[in-house]
Image (cartoon, helix red, strand yellow):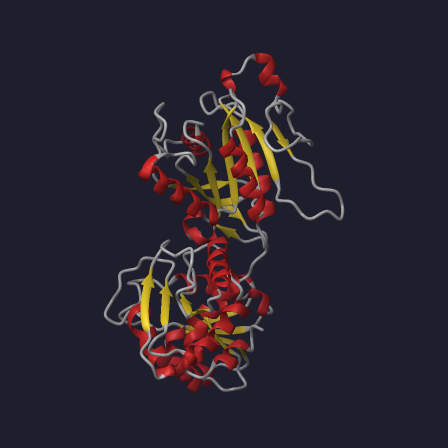
Length: 435
């Protein structure tokens, strides 16, 4: 079990991918990335051979890395892959980088650093990404060179080592200097296992610097508060369970030592009549209009989707994007993007309900295009607005990257919760508990 900062235990099986620290292993071909991933995970996660370019797609492994907790380890193709297919592999590697919380650069300790490795270091620093440089294949070094440890360091001197022969943590910048991403350097051998424990410790060290204390809703609550969660169970609801945003909110309410009362929209009126002093009502966005008519104006009301926008992205920017919806015309283009790849049904929110709500709101018939999963474009300047899901299956880095793409493209972006509240005329009310 991993121990969270608030003191509550959370098991690996209960930790969604978007909530784990994502650690990506990068480097050129044949540096030993896959062998090192296998050594860190303690099992054969990735295929290994002496042939350069064996890894053709990112390979992911969920594991527990104490004291950091649940993590996703990602092995990537070589950044120097060649040919048309190789270029596509490199692109997949770069896509992985944008969602990583920690990067690991794997180099070959038997040779000098190459240009591609230095470029990766510069990219990590540009992204403000904490990273570890691993000089792999230490077993092939002469004894004197192995003992020297950091003589082949990339990107500057290191200090503050826990063990001069295997691991160094780079000193913090001088007071008043711009904060630099945490970094460490490790000399290791995937073949013999030397330095692997030091690598795990270094990952935990820089990984903790990557995290921040984030709460879905608990920071809005006090112990003893009563919170009503409105959870529709319809044809789009998963069988036998509730969806991830509802799970995350429910857990965070309990972590705040508040009480959660869960019902469907049809039972909401009776529940509110029976329970006094409700601190907050949180509803599925699709039931916003119906729920808003039932909940008294004096009772704070918001949605799971708006809470997710606040949790993983820039809520204020996403709300500002809602103003664009009323100005859409027949010539407008709208991108509706979802972070997961669920099976679409006849009443699918992204492809059916959302376009219908937007058409009704703007009184026009804009063109709608759709993306799912990791298929978010690098440039959205051809669109008048991007409407995005709550991003529960994406981590914060990926969600903020998507918002940055929209900002650089000059295209407003709004999330499902803000869009639905806007078209139903209750956006201002739904934001009061959050802003």
